Image (cartoon, rainbow, N blue to C red; front, top):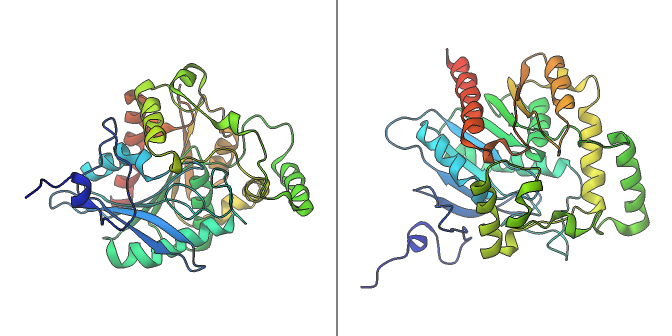
Length: 330
């Protein structure tokens, strides 16, 4: 009898596939499948059960723009070792989920609220029936902004929200998020919503680009992402479209409204990166000071992708996570 490949054991041959490279092994016990959102978009998702007899609940992990399930294998392992189940999915238009326009390399969403539809559908169809409570929402960057909006709408979905460098404002923009949104909306009005808002070359990375990268100071974790893109180029998203930009800038403008932090109904901890050149750390700090049931902390020397940073920085991130969750149960 031929020996089974590991992929044959954890995956349905006719179902979605995970990208597994030597530098990024899949955590044991993965279940990967497709689901349909309430507006009929196909999402790829994956589940892991906690190890041993411990059961602290489920981490619902939501990613940033361009990201995908496989990028978080190491972080998923960290949560599993703490006794949590993990449930995660690729947002519509990226990763292994359904692409929404003909040019599959461009980032697209019709309206930012559609990400909320993804999250609500995943919560109703997968988390509630298949995952042990309580539920904790962990988000990075764009996923962090979507998580903040979720925190304003239904305080019963999640016990707590833990965010890495949430995309509240883009770093270094001369215009406000509202003005950027108006400009992008004007371009969309001309029928150019599906056109790239920047050159794809600005979003194409190689191992040689590591010294000047804005994401992480850890070469091995940076290289790991490049290894996955080389094996599965179909997972990659490059430039955003004007429609994505219009939707996202408008959502950021709403989040920057002085009343927005007061609307968040779920206890929230936001971590900002001191050396972030992707999103605005001052905007995160300002929101953290204004939240009624939330707060923030800044991780020194860190770049944008806190979960992909070096061991010392990741240690600080998980120490903050552990304290935040322990605080909830004490």
